[in-house]
Structure formats: C-alpha cells, structure tokens
Length: 47
Image (cartoon, rainbow, N blue to C red; front, side, top):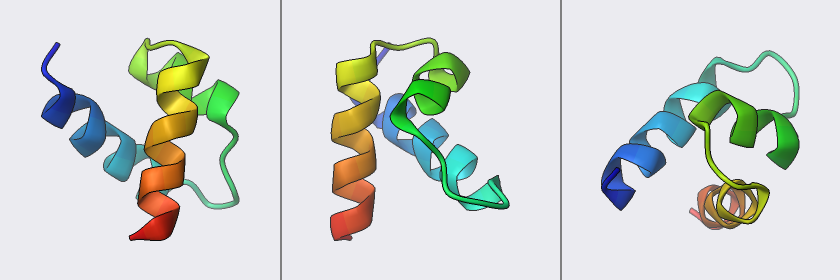
C-alpha cells in the first residue's frame, strides 16, 4: 500500500473520531503496524 493512502486513511479516521484516538486503535483501523500508526499520528498532530 502506498504511503499516501495510509496518510489519507489516517486523516479520515482521526477526523471522524469523537474523542482522542490511540495509536493502537489507528493501527487496527488501517491494518498497519503500531509504529506506523504512531508516526502518522505524530505527523498529523504537528500539522
């Protein structure tokens, strides 16, 4: 899966979450590793 699809999926999941989202839940939603989800969340929080 190309990286831009992960980022786009992460944005959708984070925006649609009613409360804060953990990296574990994001990794489950994206079917990705925890480390990948954590890096995506950090990038989104910086933006």
